[in-house]
Image (cartoon, rainbow, N blue to C red):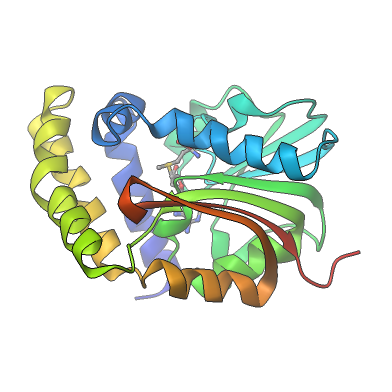
Length: 227
Ligand SMILES: C[S@@+](CC[C@H](N)C(=O)[O-])C[C@H]1O[C@@H](n2cnc3c(N)ncnc32)[C@H](O)[C@@H]1O
C-alpha cells in the first residue's frame, strides 16, 4: 500500500474520532494523557532551559501538546488530518501532510514536538529521519510496545479488550471500534528498544522514559549532523 492510500486511512480514522478525542484519551490512559505531554515538555525545558523560537507540532491534532509550550514565537501545526487541524487554534500556521515527506527545508525549526502520533507513522524510519532533518531538537511522546514479555501481554490485552469498551462510555459504538485500532497499531510496532535504535540513527537521545508499563514512551533528542 502506497503513502497516499495510508494517508487516506489515517485521515478517515482521525476524522471519525475527532469529536470524542480528548475525552476518550483521558479514559484509556486512566487520566494520564495530558500529564505525559506536560512531562515530555518539562523534560525538554530541564535539558535546554531557554525558550525556543520556531516550533513544529508534528501530528498536532487540536494542539493539545502545544498548550504546554513556553515562550514560543512561531508555531506550525502539521498533520495528515484536515479535520483535526481545523480544531487547532493554538498554531500560527497549519500545514497538511505526512511525516514521511515533510514539506519543510532542513533545520527549519528549533524544536519539533509530537504528542501521541509517531506510532501512527506509515514508515517509522522515514518519519524519524524527517523529524531530525527539519528540526534541531525533538520532544516526542508516543504509544510504544513494552520489551518485557509480561508487560507486553498485559498492555496488548488492555488495548484489545478494555480500550474499545471503555471508550463507549463517552462515544457511540462505531467510534469505539476505531479505538480498537490502537491494538492493531501497538501489535504491529517494534518493541521500544528497537524504536530507540531507529530514532538513534538520526538523533542523539538525551532523555528517555517509559510510562504505563511501557505502553507509552517519551524522549528528548538532539538531531544528528546539526550545529
Ligand atoms: C492522536 S492525534 C495526536 C494529537 C495531539 N498531538 C495530541 O497530543 O493529542 C495523532 C495525530 O497524528 C496525525 N498523524 C498520524 N500519522 C501521521 C502521519 N504519518 N503523518 C502526519 N500526521 C499523522 C493524525 O492525523 C492525528 O491528528
